[in-house]
Image 1 (cartoon, rainbow, N blue to C red):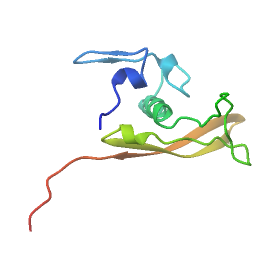
Image 2 (image 1 turned 180 degrees about the vertical axis):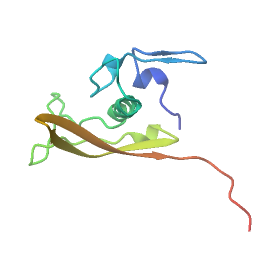
Image 3 (image 1 turned 90 degrees about the vertical axis):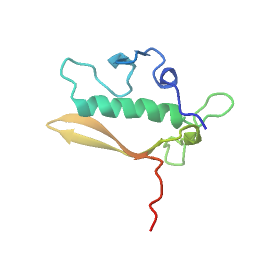
Length: 119
C-alpha cells in the first residue's frame, strides 16, 4: 500500500528537500490573509487531505447523492494511506458578534510501526 503523493493532495504545489510551496487559494475553507494562524493553515491542509480521501458520492451523471436530510454522503478511500487517517466528524455553525463561522470538525489518526516490547 502506497501513501498519497504530494501532487495528489496539492496539484498546484511544489516541494523540494527543504520546502513546501502551497498557494493559500488552493486550500479549501481558508480565507487567505497575511495573518492566517497556524491553526487555520493546519486545518486547511487537513481539509485538502480529507477532500482527496473522502470523495462526495455521486451518480453516473455527477449528481450528488444525499441523505433524506439533504446531507452529503462521503465515500472512504483511506485504504490508499499507510500512516494517517482523517475522518470528518461534524459541521457546526457559530454566530459570533453577528458573523457566522463554519467549523469543520475532523478526527486525525496517525499510525506508526513499532517493535513490540518483550516481557
